[in-house]
Image (cartoon, rainbow, N blue to C red; front, top):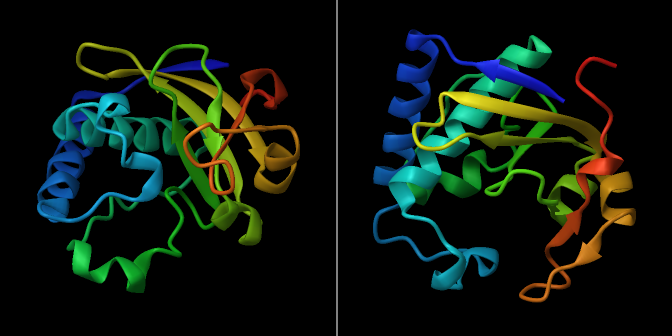
Length: 164
């Protein structure tokens, strides 16, 4: 586990990306794993926190982060692009210490999953918990109650530390 503090310019770029991702999704339907409104955070906060996690993971692992965002209508064209680097998917944990989500698309693509927690209220400090190959994470996970075939939750204890 490693705590990453975003510099002002990093935080500015992550917030910019988060706002643009929110704007790109206006009037778009939610994926099945985001359908339950009671489990969702305000979109603006969620997109900024997620972008801060991606920036922090890139910084922690010394990987490229493009800060990509596109119109929702173009999602099918770009959905294969990793969150960070060429094969790293970042999973934001909303509550410190909670398990992280794993999905079949990451498993099929043989991606690495990194779990991170953006500290409230402004998300400028991010705890990067560690990484695991997506197929292994899937094996070690429990099916979710809302989407058992498409979302599983893996305990943070299965992660390899970013320092390792």
